[in-house]
Length: 201
Ligand SMILES: [Fe+2]
Image (cartoon, rainbow, N blue to C red; front, side, top):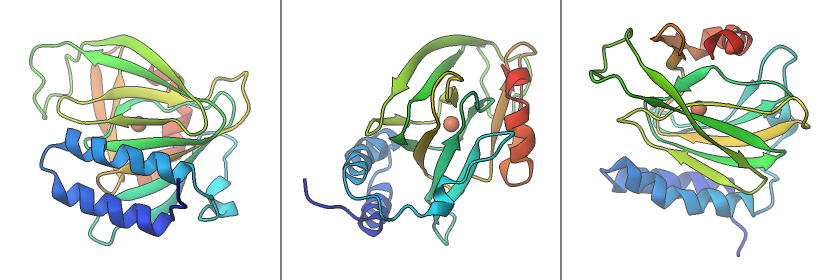
């Protein structure tokens, strides 16, 4: 497999996102691109992209389209750090760089799943996947792909690469016990997000 650069990956991903009207087709086209990027030299990742935080998982920006289209981040998970239960409102392609990433899925079963409904949400825990370096995982919205992601506390640090179909400045966080969800501004509340992960489950 020939070397594949970050610039090529971004250009190709933007072209695929523009070429498909069905988001499932977008992620199907971009998944092998992410896989190829993970198999290529990772000199596009700088020390800043491996920064972590003591109190919560860290999100480090790699690329953001000027038109608020695609965005690419590294997420750095110290042992025991998790997201809340959440969805993204867009598609995503996730690749693992280092360590083991665990993704736990949730299924929403309440009958009225309108976009403006924030209470009476019925969530059930689904399956999980364990992703190793080089693995790629994807999600597509509508219906929302609801999940919780993190690094088990008995394992070393995990670093993953996340491509989203929009600027990822907010997403829905769910309280499964209360049956509610809340649109959270990630840019301003990321610390609170990570610290509230236990309550969110
Ligand atoms: Fe996510």
